[in-house]
Length: 392
Image (tube, rainbow, N blue to C red; front, side, top):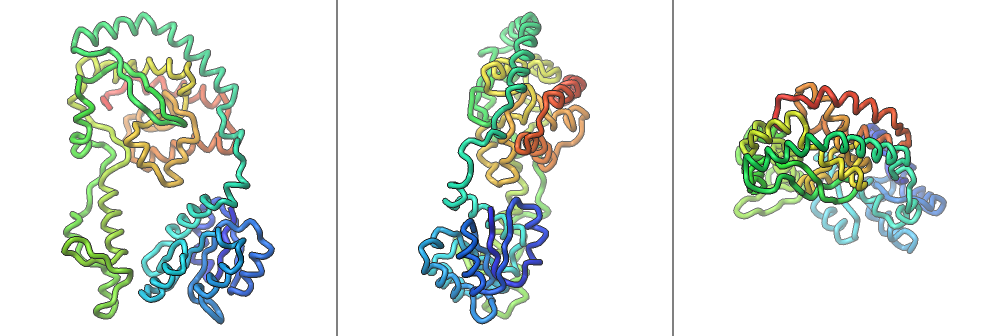
């Protein structure tokens, strides 16, 4: 994807741009930007400073819109300090987004540009409809079928005994089927390790017992007023004012409070010492025997032996950011990097650690450097993790 930057403050975005898969072309003013648009036909998004030599960003936006070929290019306007009149003019002119440098991070602006560029019809038309790197390699699929079939054959006597024990301890089916999300949504098989009706308690337990949750340094209602607005003259604000019930709050401080509240609740859910688990359930979880029915998922093609753990729908729908959703480019798997790196060693698993490990495995498919030997190494490293103390 290609971004056209108009202005003389590219250094503000430099570190963020380096982390993004995006080519940058720069024009110091609107005149040179128009010349670039005539020659650079593949521009997918425009990032424009409001303060430009000789004129301003909204004037350029108006001139740019006079050519029909430019109408579909997303346009982001950036201003040093918030001005309510310019903000209103920008919205009326139809700019795609508006940022204020005083209250916005460079990474936030660049991520927004990347998101808008990905939706540009020009990008979608040039993108391949069937990327071979996104397919599961034939060698991996053959290995999965052979390994899963042999493992299921060997495990059949053990499965029979465990299923009988589950049925004798508590009422209900001996297996558990739930929807999970990997590269697709599918029926996920496990041996039942919990009492009936356990799904109904998940939200209540997640609030108090989720291992991934962190605590706010202070409650949202105690965060006070916006520190940026406090530095400005009276009756002026750093960003547009919002009215929420009886409260008047600037847009920046509302977003900051919402961000801190979101940080307190994790995307992933893992319950420590879950009270819903039965005695047999605790044994089969500690030994990972409850995962054996997923060999059927592997044979069906829903999963792989090694991959990123498929997520419940309520978790998967929260992974909307580019760096979080990249994990879904890899196949769903019974075991994977995060299990062997942290879970097997009994280490503390943070949400950031898990996302990084999932993305690391996905990169092997994105960059076409997957090998069966890598999967075999992970399987061998999984063996010590099969016997664990925590029932999570």
